[in-house]
Image (cartoon, rainbow, N blue to C red):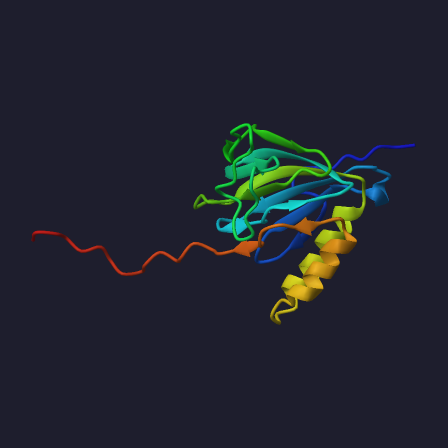
Length: 185
């Protein structure tokens, strides 16, 4: 039996306008855990969601992400950013070296509110739920047509994802190309 060694930047890559996912270790490699490197662009919010059977681990490699991993005292359907647990837990801003473990049944979310891409190592057990999920979501984003929310919801159900708040991708507005003006000239 042999292991798997990948040089930096290697692995099967799925790129969409919403994120970039590089497969590092998968069920095809004999792994019970799916391992990915994910680039999260500015403005991407995965939305709060929960898995019945899966557990996940996130490790911030570069950049900054807002993270949440708790059951709120009160769930709201539109946004998770203001959720608070009965014990007073709130979403946190995580930077390089921070991590988040999510046991099954725990609502969780991440979003990039900074102006720069963030990069994280993401692990999911059991394999291959998220491998197949990422493959299908990449096809949906690549279709060029409008995203069918019903099809996305059905796909998520098959991969143990119960969406609690919407997934959003709102890239920051492009910087104005007009030159700055002087005041008081």
